[in-house]
Image (tube, rainbow, N blue to C red; front, side):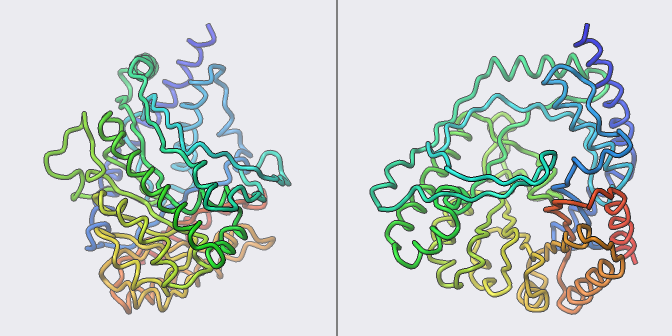
Length: 411
């Protein structure tokens, strides 16, 4: 009986989402994203993602009531969509379908991490990690294995059947393939620690080249396997917290049964390389990531790493469309370097919603500064508030931030 009750809960939530997804404003937002991503923006776009959800449930809107774990996953997704729509929709788009994860298994590189973890708030999504160095010599590189991808087609079929039973007649259900995450240096950081990586770049370049090459080749093999199995995602709505809607993808001769990397966006980043020179960035990041970039239809590059001094190198990325300008970037130089060639993907400072005192003037001034610099340099611009570790237990701050953002970009 509990599964039937779970179904009724999900169908009610899905019905609410379906009604929102059918609103004309959703298609209006898709068109605005397509214009921005085509470098012909009508206005700047705004997103809020990577949210401290554990602090937002003051009114009980996010409380899960389903008992079945599969149902709880769907319930969490639906409740978060409804919460964001009610409180800070900005330019997020509510899709008219349910994504059903395909049963794809990735063996990974065969390396775990040894770490110390510090958590101040056990309900928070955020913890501090101190990683031990597991790679001391070139011989250690042999620990890295080539990922093996497998697909349990029967399990995918079972998941689709259950999703259709849960949501049929209310929302379409679609199998969701793998949206590959291909950072070379993020996993290496978890195997060596940031200090270990930066020291080895200077003292053991042969080790670092060997590791980067092993990961690059492993990712290429992984992509071959994902394509061969037909389990890549397609028709992305998001790429790294930003709208992925575009008229340019999927590519020619697209087959939804066999999606290719050429049909989707890729996200690239090397956050640790904020601390290295442009030359070292090109030698260790671009040289090994370039074979990955070359396979994809469009590329979003960067995350928290300030890239204003590395744009000469970043420009070499094929089919680059968006470049991250983090809170630590020199916006003036970044805008000059980006110009009208790429989307200036601004990451407003999440500290402004985390400070003891919430100052709306700081938020608005940051927006106006970015908008002025982008106008001066002809930059298409988007604002992506992310990495929100805390709102000091005051969820209304995100509502206010959203109001300020939309007022500024629509002015």
